[in-house]
Length: 120
Image 1 (spheres, helix red, strand yellow):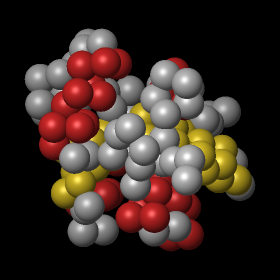
Image 2 (cartoon, helix red, strand yellow):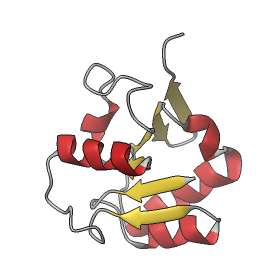
Image 3 (cartoon, rainbow, N blue to C red):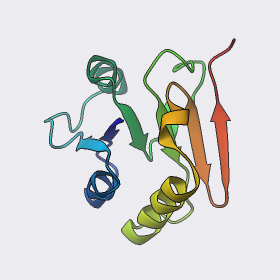
Image 4 (cartoon, helix red, strand yellow):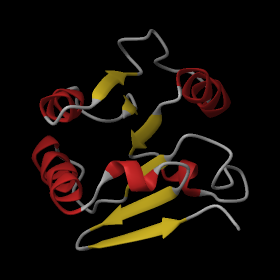
C-alpha cells in the first residue's frame, strides 16, 4: 500500500510505515510543502496514495467524499507531539489493516476510529 505523510507530521511517521512494509513518502520529500489541499489531493490521486494528516479539513466528507480519493486518515489528537503522534500511528497499525481503509475518510482519536466509507 502506498501512503503519503502530510507536512504537519514528523518524518518518523513515514519511517515507521516503511518499517511496516508500506511505501511511504512525505509531502516535504516531494517538494509539495505549502501546497493547497486540492494540489495534495491531485498528487494523491496521481500516485494512488492514501494520506495521513493532522489537517482536520481533510475530514470534511462534503469536500472529500469517500471513494473520490485513495483514502484519508486524519489524526485528531489532543497532544500532537511527535511521541503522541507516533503512539497513535502505532496503535492504528497494530489494530487495523490500512488496506481496508482505502477510499475512506478515517478519523483517529484517542481510543476510537470513525470510518466514513463510500456510499453503496
